[in-house]
Image (tube, rainbow, N blue to C red; front, side, top):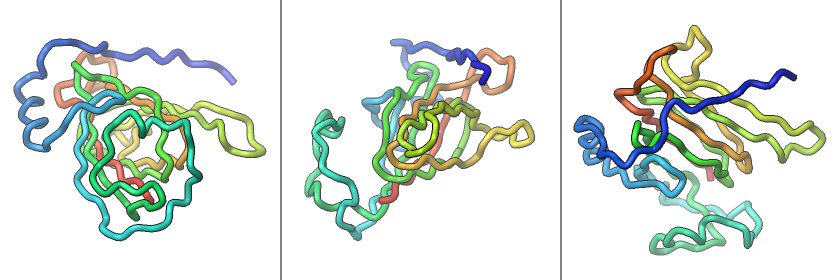
Length: 177
């Protein structure tokens, strides 16, 4: 299988966000995410189900404060967030969700990298694709990542061959359960 070198288009910057992105951060109540970029929870289904996931001592959930009422034996049936990458926070580092995650593009372009290392009976592989609105070029408007897959993302210029992203990359993620 031929290898492709993936090169991020942006590097993190201590500069403040441009005014239009600062306004978006404020309007959507986005906060810095431990993995990079910004996020805000927009929905948490009130119904819960017993967690289908075994207890684990190697979890990043211990790195962040627990929300009030958190019970590791239960999961909400779904949660949804906004997630935004910007030119000053252009990369979402590798992480994994335990539950299946449906991603929906709102604006911008980015590249996703998935590591498929937990599929019994299959060869481990890396998958990469561009998310954006040019579906004729194969860009994705919606994509699903099964639980347990490592994923990362980074911002791309607004157009192929371009050098900047004015809108950032804004998506929603819905995790079930």
